[in-house]
Picture 1 (tube, rainbow, N blue to C red):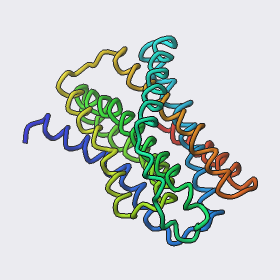
Picture 2 (cartoon, one colour; picture 1 turned 90 degrees about the vertical axis):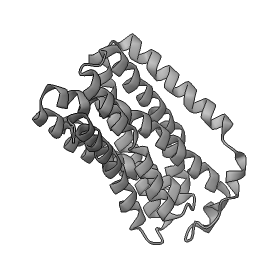
Picture 3 (cartoon, rainbow, N blue to C red; picture 1 turned 180 degrees about the vertical axis):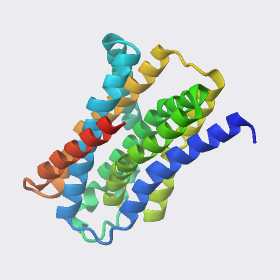
Length: 254
């Protein structure tokens, strides 16, 4: 097996297993209560905020500049808004939220949040794949270390994507499939990273800030409001604070 093929396979496995494990964790939940799902949505919102603010954006600033990062973020937000407008409204007919029957009328909103966040995670995974491929181009130990850490890093992102889909009544096996698919771009990024060796820092800056902008918009505009609407009270905020703390730990451990 040639080196580039091996690096590409590692990239695919790293992304697909990482986000896929997040889907598996969500699958294991049986008949979750509104209170629990409110905590989970808040928790995953906190994780995403930390990943964006303490991981993606600082790395984007380092690779390019603040102004270039702001341009990338603006493009990311614009794309999410466009996708939101183009998404079919008939998804609102989705049913079967089990123990949260009164949330059925807003099932579309949860599905939309999950899909949009999945797109943001998929975009985010491409530059992470570039990092893995470039790491292997430098030396094998660096590339393998990055692959393992990024794979672990993707687990909470898989949960963040899967939780709203679960709330929207999507079949749990489809959720697992979608979370796995969100990790595929990392394989393509790893291939390009190994092939080129050193990617333009400005290109990586745009990719990272693009993903950060889309994920920040989805988290603040979709996940946080829904976490508070599912169950009234402070519980979602407490979950979000714990998510922020875990996200900081994950980001500073990379």
